[in-house]
Image (cartoon, rainbow, N blue to C red; front, side, top):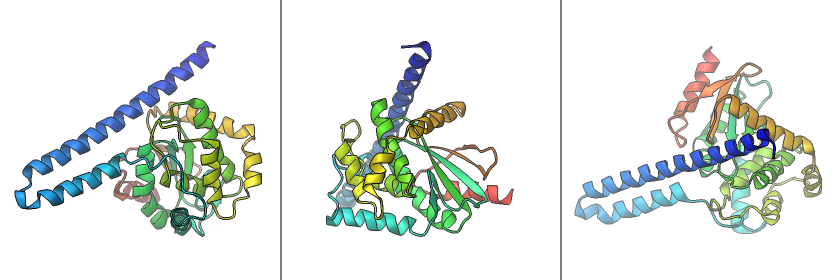
Length: 274
């Protein structure tokens, strides 16, 4: 292994370790908050608070099952309907969602196995798509950054699967479906069967063409370029964001909440005013 390859592998390990540490800190903080709430609760509402705390913990730590639901089942149909409702009618091209003429672009660096990316995708992102992307004011580009996925080869395979769906204008359908059916971290759930099952849930996706397109080496190059860009901005975790005028030089966007879209909307409004 060359010195450069060794440095790249070390960087990947450092990103994964830091991302896991950040997730652990978030989970510990949420658990501490729940404990304080329980101590302050009077006897008459203890049961209600405990139930609420359990729900919060399940939401915060949930990584889904070990495999997606089978296409055609009620659960799979519900996911497909939810994703189609969110994205239907919005232009897609490659890794981008939204009009190419939108004045503002948000770059979203993510890892498909990252549970914090799932938190953002199921939290603040949906309102942003409805308010800003659907109205033609914002386009979002999904960029690839390995942080949660343990094996680099698995990371490349799963991200290429999404990029290949983008060849048919369906990358965001694949992303949204993946995050909704994300498995437990480090469980090894990403298999060929899993990836094909996700693809089968996307209406209009030509599976044969998608399978062939996954062998295109351009996608692996795109993933490497995204990693280099992330390193240039000193990104160590996912999700991470850049925002700026479309076609211009983007700047780092610092967020305070992945559930509440307010901070993101304020950054978008600032870009529109400038």
